[in-house]
Length: 382
Image (cartoon, rainbow, N blue to C red; front, side):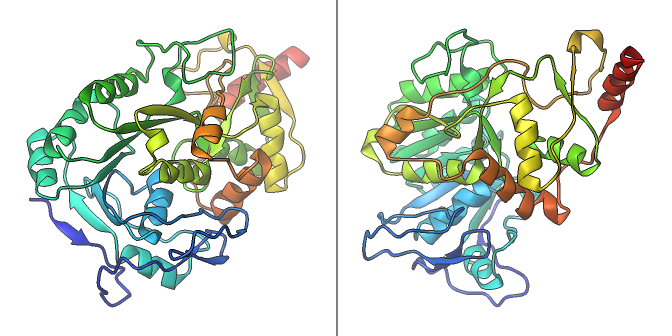
């Protein structure tokens, strides 16, 4: 049986689940204080996740123990909401972030609740959620529409369902950037997310869906910036497919968390889709150079190759889709008043300094495909 419990850090004494606002970290060690009594705009250091006053809610996050959820849950707790994470319990429910003080971490972890279970066990989902009567659901890890129906059935009085979709649902187009009204691809590898959006739209629930492009930042479990950092650290050339002039887009995880936070309870976000990413686009070549600049490495040697000339088997030689892929964030800026805080180099520096630069990463370096590419390149040069 799953249990709804408060998660306590082992080295701190238990404390009550107080919902009063408290100081929090901007994840770079700078301390800020949330002001609940006055909606006074305060200039904050780069990288801070900002909060504004709102009524306290009983919030369920499906997932929440890694990447997006780690930052989003801190925003919600600091605002005074009661936050429960629904996970299988295979990963630690909370983790201390780089630059986060012991006090801030203890305060955060003492207020997080955990509901252990498998979201694919639909009967359990219905019974356990119905007993809790949550006001808002943040679905961070949902991939298929059939995973959402039981949640909606269990919470008939749900005020808002906020979903993490993907810009990968758009149909490939010659007209860019992608906008929220563009045609979608029902056969894309993200078709489950598209079907989930369709289910939410037909369910009658108040919903909001965010469509990120590529997400980067500290604790990223996808090899986005980490792929470049491994090669830069090893002093290796960067192999990039074709011309390297393919245009793409990255959005910082803290900016995405802020967008998720800002749609909470916002009438203008009701039954709406928003693209969320960085404001500027970048070529593959430019991204390699930006990673080097952010991490303090010399500008890298870039080797271009034709992917059709290689058989990489099941290995992935490059972490991005080999095409133009970027989206407009104008709607989120105008409707939500949201604006990304990080430009690309600043965001990559934040990721490097708080993660890879500290010796932490998710995947070990694998240069197998690089060596295949570089080996053929050397033969051609000879």
